[in-house]
Length: 105
Image 1: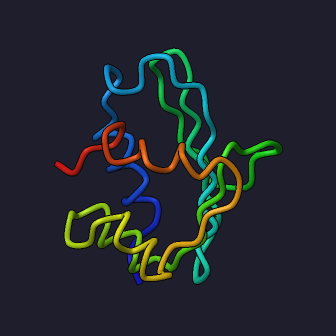
Image 2: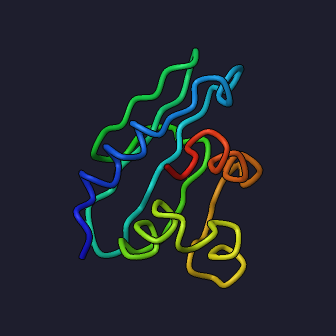
């Protein structure tokens, strides 16, 4: 299994504040074989924390390997969603912005 902390640190490092302009959202990650994490984006800033947010904008359900593949660019997030490897609850349209806000290095 992937090191979730390293994956979310990489996500924070890849954060594109320009692409996130005007975005105020909380992305909750429910990792089926690991700990939950959330990524809060507001005012061009990105904060990552382990745990569950009280009021996420969108919740993404996936396993750690799927997250690692999407983060590395090996798998396209939208394709993984269409294949049922990622499930989403809440504002699903927000999830479509993840690729531009957190581009693959």
